[in-house]
Image 1 (tube, rainbow, N blue to C red):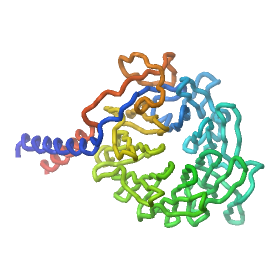
Image 2 (cartoon, rainbow, N blue to C red):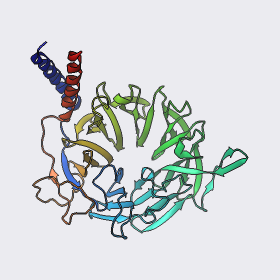
Image 3 (cartoon, one colour):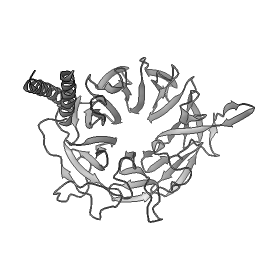
Image 4 (cartoon, rainbow, N blue to C red):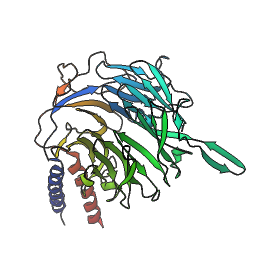
Length: 435
């Protein structure tokens, strides 16, 4: 057949896939609000160096892994105050043989919760307003504190390692056991009341209880009591002191988060390349899919009140980079909108009230953005913007971070999806022709 024939075939596929891509994202257009580029000092513009951010309220926490020529600013955990455009080192996190575990870092109000890089038996709570720190559990703690035992030949090791803290108000929850970093099947879930010092077991069921999240009276976590290859989602009600399985589908359910009446998680029952975002409403006991179809991969869910943000991505089997677009879902109105359109890939780092922290990334650069929905939270001072700035180094610009209105758009989504799929199809068809 002629080259023209194959070109027509590829263009036809391109038109079909483009229609699918738009249909999958065009529920309600783009979210309305303002976008502010953020450039915290001492961060790296390289995604391979500064690889994770924690966000809540007015605070962003990140780990700087770039050595500085200024000894006052070593590698360590840094706190960025958005309203003040100011970055400071979290005391006690300066790089040493332990380091800070950024994946174990949380923000609650003005408190930064962090742990050392390697499994430790304490959690550090730094109050960024008073400049004071508390380590928990400490000598004031009382209640059910468990020690774990492992036999190595003739040697018995007695220890307890705590990791993955989650906090809400005066309650902090963590996973503990022996060698928790190795996904040991014997990990449990414990909670401490920071006011009374009481420590209680939340779950000591067989298997591992990991990645807890707490909101009000509810605690949720990822549970492997049904097998390490079949993680499920469980919930504990602190008022009724009852445990409830939320989802025990015979596949992977991971990274649960609870907020108020809702639990969300990533669900892999359709395979890892077509993951879904599922939601469980506690008051009604009902489960629904809020992000998931047969041609896209979904991930990185965050929830705040009745708003959920997650990523919709090109499957890795189509494009190894897995290019992503941020999606906002409003539970109350059942509406979907996209974050500001990008020609690159987006990553999500959190939602807090009306604010969403996300980044636009290439293989070698990252630019952070704060998106404020409908101006209901006061934005940073507005200045005229000629062109979006890109943060390519750890230096902090002297000017105030810029803001700009999100432009109107006819349809959400990203244009790279049909292109990537069309290229893949072209390769397949041309390869077939040669055979």
